[in-house]
Image (cartoon, rainbow, N blue to C red):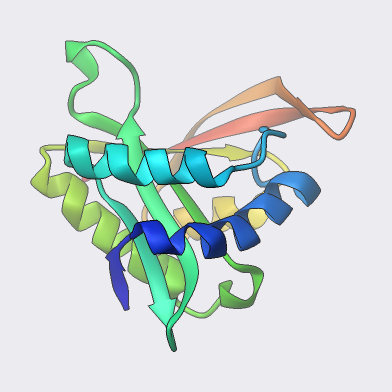
Length: 161
């Protein structure tokens, strides 16, 4: 089931998101999510009319998807970037596709024309996932990220809705 995130989801979100921040090249960030940060993000999304969705199965939250403006300024008002994170046990089971379908429906309703994904070049599974959903690679920025003592590429993919 896909539904809006609730404040009570925060501990579970942290339980699968923070290990991926710490241990993988899924993201360039090394700053783990705190309860206060996630609670504020969920509240801000609700206040601003942006979706912060979770996938739930058997009462357990197994994934999240949200979006934010791609860039500041009125010229970018119809472009958005998204984040999708799945618990390891949820990968490859359809939760990601369901989250993205719901997120795309929401952003279309908000007038978004282009949805962007920024993926670390080492995250080939995420690149393939996005391509399978109709995203096209439109740019690769060499060595703009740094994590685990090495430089990493940023792959930009977009889907025109």
